[in-house]
Figure 1 (cartoon, rainbow, N blue to C red):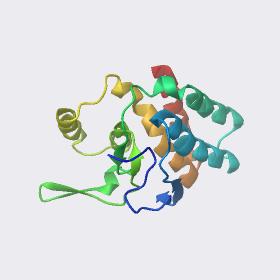
Figure 2: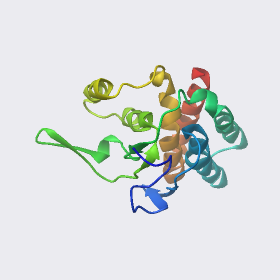
Figure 3: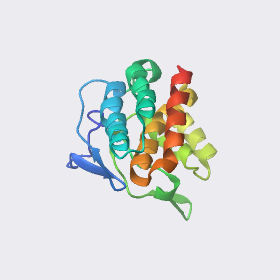
Figure 4: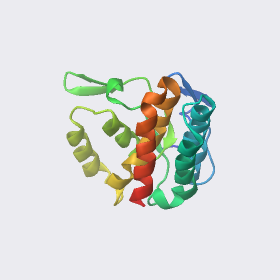
Length: 180
């Protein structure tokens, strides 16, 4: 667990990083949805707009997600400790065990790390999901919320790597809106 959404690990910095992008790691008051919109979606949408990667209509799509996020988020859950940058390249398989590297750890929603593993294609993801479901089943409707949870890492990729990820980020935003 974590003391709040956005909270860094004990002793961790408030100014964190996800790849080469800055990431705020400060415990927020309130629930996941408002924190996710304010600290994980809006900063990267502004950066994409300021860089000229997102148009005003692109920003409007993501702004609609933020405006409706309370309806899109699913049931409330307590903060979980996330790896925060959990893609297949940060999962190392060795001698029957798994090692995670390069964390951007913070308090978040437990569906987020799983959605990120799905985004970039983790080997054995079905086994990981099955084990997770056995240990701590996710709330009903979690599969429909995957695009919402993928929006943050996709926006980070838009900021770091440019417009090649813009279409994928916008598709995730539109899918999140349709899932409501």
